[in-house]
Image (cartoon, rainbow, N blue to C red; front, side):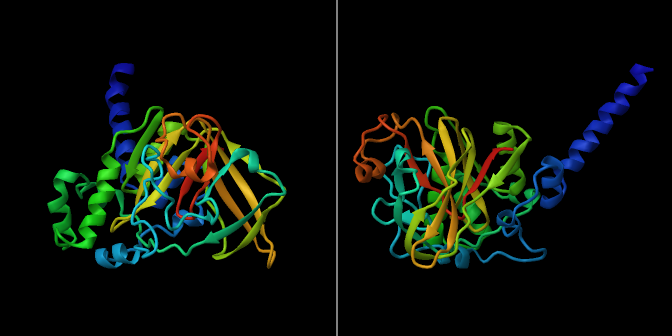
Length: 303
């Protein structure tokens, strides 16, 4: 009896896998993460049925004249500066020390309006589009973009950053669909996970750190939205990191903002010229270095 059942069970398992892989993004989320409701931050990234992609509008709208055009958050080996969408204490460019997380801390914070409007493609569509430097001409042709255009340069930079080798102790992956983002996060943290993100109203004023600072995880997968015609997230998992939720209160109007921050406990492999060391006046590997996470970031932590 067991011998007769084996082919049937094998076939049934294959059908389940195929069905699981072909589900729409929302259904896939429910199947993969049945105990984690889909947050609004993700729901807003789902592409409306039948909508089209205006690559030029999405890419060029995401350029801020007074800020860097691309920031690879995990490329701490480079002497980069924070992304234009990153919440910033204007005196330290968004970086701070873990020891400063106490209720008397005040920071002049600037929360920028998010300009990256790219949405997720269904997995089957995203997987049908190449995503590699050697396929760039084909990619540009699909979006009717010229090779010498600003849009082409932005897309090339994004792909090249995704292709860079990971630092020691770091796992990284560029997710071109919500389904692949879920799969990578589960592979690093397991299925019992949830997503958090920075929740703020836009504006600039002095904020005071209130009571209720929490360490919510000592391991995480952080996914940063990058510049591309459709939603692509640069995800990385670093285990020597603490994730905090910080309750800020505006000193002018009392508005509350819950900001997610990441504190890197080991910075010994970072470039000594990294801007974090310059503004904080510390050296690599000496103290934990923390930074705020933008509203566009999706942070996965154990449930």
